[in-house]
Length: 287
Image 1 (tube, rainbow, N blue to C red):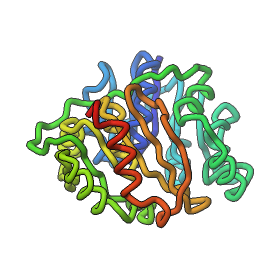
Image 2 (cartoon, rainbow, N blue to C red):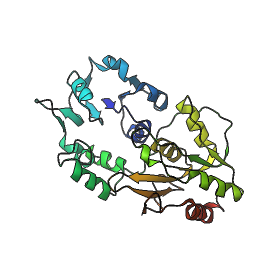
Image 3 (cartoon, rainbow, N blue to C red):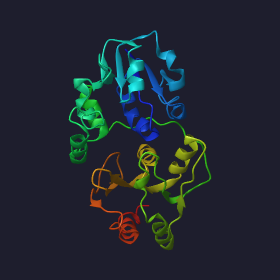
Image 4 (tube, rainbow, N blue to C red):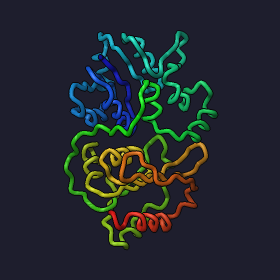
């Protein structure tokens, strides 16, 4: 089987999509952003990774299946230049409007190009309790069973400790940054834990190495969260829900995608003192 996956970014989204590599067989080509190629190279035998700038390398092949998880006009236009037997995901119709295949509805009904419109799509997203992988796997006619991420070997770094804090928010949702990371760091250090704020690295493999070197990660950005989940590092994620301006605490431990709590708070409500106390009581014997 000859498969093309189109998933450019963000890096955390690319990582969580690698679960597909556990199920797909044959010749697989992945079209992604140049910065994300280091996260894919060598993670599966026979996987060919192509950066977007060299996308013409993917032409001239008849694909059995194209999985397009991007929802932009540019990628939809490029898709028209490819040959394939089956498409899953977004495409441009004859009027150059973005549409998506019926089998990809579980995921794209929640997206910016949802057939229901943005307002209802946001509400559907807020109410959704299934994981990204469950939605994608269902559309592809399979069932997600906790398939692990495929990650490369990290670059060794000297930053090591008990708790890693990923305080930076990504560029798409800068308001996601929680207001009390500094206070949380002070409290955890007073409890005798070695706490490090993850620095900005020039290489994603160094960033992965930093995450590997800690036993717990606390943060609000998707990339370090997914790197932690794929590395069996216990993870607490403070995720902003843009629809309602609330934060959700997502506690992952012991197994990938095992949710221990999911509650909503405003930034002002969610002070670091009760969170630090909760973390200490829950994890201190284990960390």
